[in-house]
Image 1 (spheres, rainbow, N blue to C red):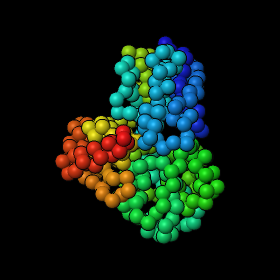
Image 2: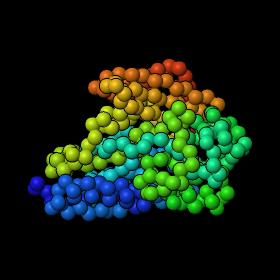
Image 3: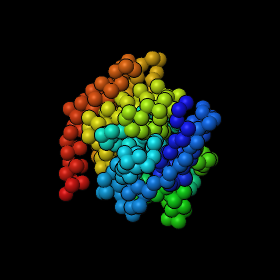
Length: 313
């Protein structure tokens, strides 16, 4: 191994640092002589916490400054939650490695025990900043009162108590990584709440042509996860979606075939379009685009057009 030092860029939240530390530890187990340094980088999404993501630009807010550090050589590698990464990467960068996916589901942290969405109290107050989660919850339970909530996991848990909410929606993977699995009151299965694109997977981004870093990362790539994430991101890319619209997608490999489900919804949950397709794994990106085209023909183009007009008004 010729490269002895690797600089990893990461957001400074506790969850982001856990993820970067996991990558660091994994690499040092593979290469005992490798020196790995973490560089904390504050992104615009971390600075602006009092405005919903849909109103300030969406996904790229959590990666832009880190990608700039990659491009100017301050770091060699960026660790991202793949659900935060736009489908179009800056010229000169590539997502070289997708790690094995953790639990992709959303979940509810609850003030009182409930066995299902149907068991939540009438008019329960639920916190989330995600339009995707809002739309799907309201579709199942129009009586719910959704409260906008941003911030890291610890901040949201604190706000839930301070604001007297009945529950908040978070990604199960993040809670488990931070040791909060016992706080999960109810898992939202994909049939009730389809996950965000690539939720639960980490992406390792580096410079195109940096062969030394590429070689180091190769053992961390998980081909099955990379295949399912490719299908989901192709679906999202065809819809040209971001945080301004409720879009969800989830792919699984089942009995040697890739099964992809995708969704487009109105924010208030009054209309949801959801379809599924199956294909051989080698056709992951093609099936992602094909599923998006089906939804567009079914009316997603109308929903998305209206939402984009409202966002840009």
